[in-house]
Length: 332
Image (cartoon, rainbow, N blue to C red; front, side):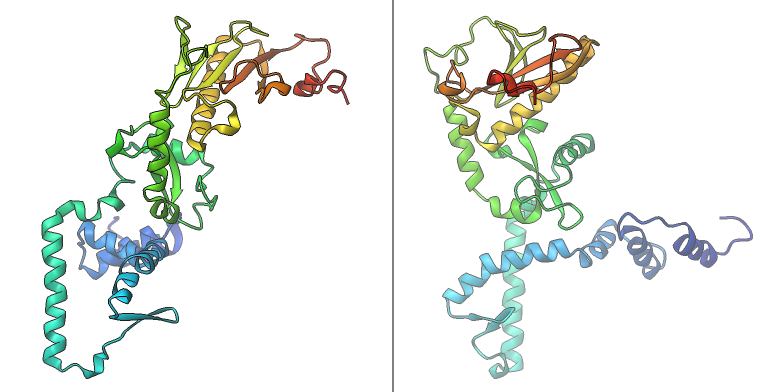
């Protein structure tokens, strides 16, 4: 602050001339500090954000409808009325002492439960924070196009969280291949269903077909891998660096995979693509290919995706690309 600038003028100039807002946070933080005579705790500042966070309000509206609402209705203490609930025992019939005693019991129940649970009380909300680095968090959101991986809603309309596909408590790792971007509503609704699916996937990883060369790749070198897929050099390459991205689970085709397995394959496709581009500057494009079913030419009934690097002049007429699987149909 310069000698000529008063605190009022400095703050006013910032708010009216200098502030560039990507969200509500700056003016809300300043407002809280001003109201606190210059100081506010981190919790106070966070609470000022929370008051204006519609996504959190929507989250707890869903919680109300799914959890305490039905339970209290079943006990005939409340009933649904319009956009809210009404207490069935008429509050107007309570004496002031009765109201005071009931409120005391509510507060006591909250305090006792919170004291027993400690920080575990809101662990379901903290899981998206965890110890995931900002770099990984950004990569997960960027990969999702800043949209929910399940419902597709953009971050501008609903807050996004970084979710573990296989939860930490079931052995899931803090790796990009095990993370997805979910809006707070999809993350809350996911519950145990996605976890149940993934227990089945993880169990199926151990089910190998003895006559499948991808279930038992032997001495073949794994180029890259993650929890649900791995990459191998093709034994009969069409071009140099022809690579196969293979699902760990013995699933016949791409269409038999779960969405996280598809994401795992996509991650390896991008990883190998960048590796090939760095290793061979003559590569100018790629063909991606999957043979799904015998009539489509599939000979190994275990899902795998071909990544075929292409170079200028490697064929006389590249036009049409994968359309060439039907002779005479490539050029059009």
